[in-house]
Image (cartoon, rainbow, N blue to C red; front, side):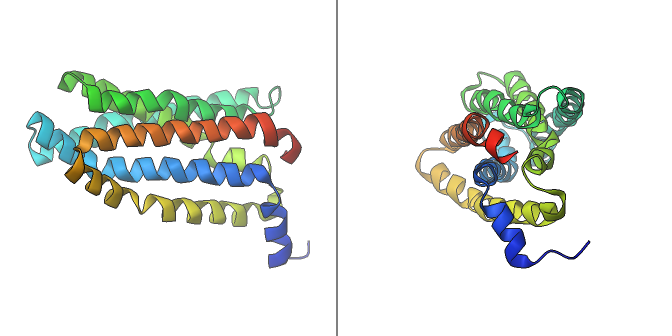
Length: 208
């Protein structure tokens, strides 16, 4: 087949409203992930007296262990149901964000360290659900020959957004404490889920 032209590629991608909504949601998710990764160990160290080594371990272990399970579960469900439910990949991403947000809030409101570990695992599992269909949902609305460019555009926009998270949480920490920063992350995660819900309801069927 003839190579695609740059203008043709961008015209195809950028006339899809679902692409913009997926990119906005991914930007929110990356903002949360970067903010979490940057500050969670500090939160555990300062609020629960863990050594920096222990705080670093616990801030990642429970989260990523559960995220691995979430990725596998989300991918399995999406592949199994896609032939019967066209929007399943988008729906799983949406559920991952909406159900993951309360677990981030638990981290800020937790009465004890064991509950924090539950929050870390819950957040990780539902983040894994979202990640399992990150590009598959995008590819549901983009033709195969344009998919690499679409993925690159979505990644670029999200990483620019995510780069602001450490600074934002650092400022919030000096003003209100990291608990407020974690609540911000929960709110951003939920807002990203609402954006995907809007895509499911209003744009996906037309763009598919």
